Length: 180
Length: 251
Image (cartoon, rainbow over all chains, first blue to last red; front, side, top):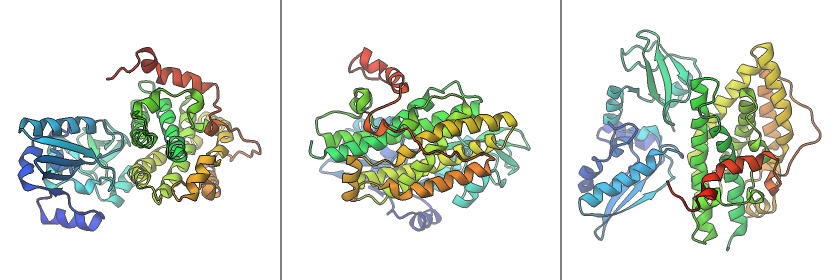
């Protein structure tokens, strides 16, 4: 699921999980399904598909939530079913909680799309703690690129984001919280 | 039911999250600032998400073909096993944050132990939820400090809230029959083990927040056994309204 080598390594080192098991021929279909709240990200970019295989003509997909209460999960499940049914495939979508999703599972391509969309990418765990406690200025403004930014709210428009503001260009923007 | 103790045990954890989520949900659109309003509902959403996972599992254990919604909406007051702390009203913002903090410290300790449960589903829910709960605690703890160490008025209000809410803390560590049975099986968490640690952590933060740690010998309890405060009926009349008025309705 991760295109780049660095991403693959990070995934192996930083989580105790095996890389997601996704049959290559299903990727084009999975790529059509996006996160309803961050529409530029596909479910593959987001890393919420843990398994997608075809067994005896039935597609079996394992989906993991970003946050326990993320309302997008029900929608993503429905969209996945619809995408496969459109291709004439029978599909079973299962929600799995363990291992728990981590922001490390977002692909590099996904992180770049996210930044272009106006959401700053998650920092490392220790840097994330620093900025959310207001000790350091490390989050890069998605508008002007300055790191002269500050936390406005620990919680943002969705469970996965915090709200920041740039002290140079004065634009408010979302920051995708590090979750590990 | 094959495993009534497990069913009751799951509910005793999940009901805390549901009722606290409902209380926080009441604040939607009524928070003192937009940011705190959003924070309250975000925390509520995390708790509802955790509750859904627990109830889905409980419905499976029950084996009567019921769903998470039946468990959430169609029980009688006495059948809810949440602690009294979480049903206390949103008296003022300091009160909301005090209630949240006193629960979050406990919740995080509980999750930390539940990770080691022999029950794979409970361990998985804890593993997912623990990241969320530690974020909640950071938020509520920050606010208790900020208000306690703020103006004379905010300090006084925060102190009153803590003095009021303190009476409900001891119940967090009560062990019911279901608790004891599940502890014996290595599934449940023996909360009495971290009681001292709980009071140490909370007391340290209160002192840091320029607040006095209440001294109390008598504590109020009952929720875990289904004996709730008067507030509970009002909470449920809101929570269950749609299902009671339009039985079996779906979104």
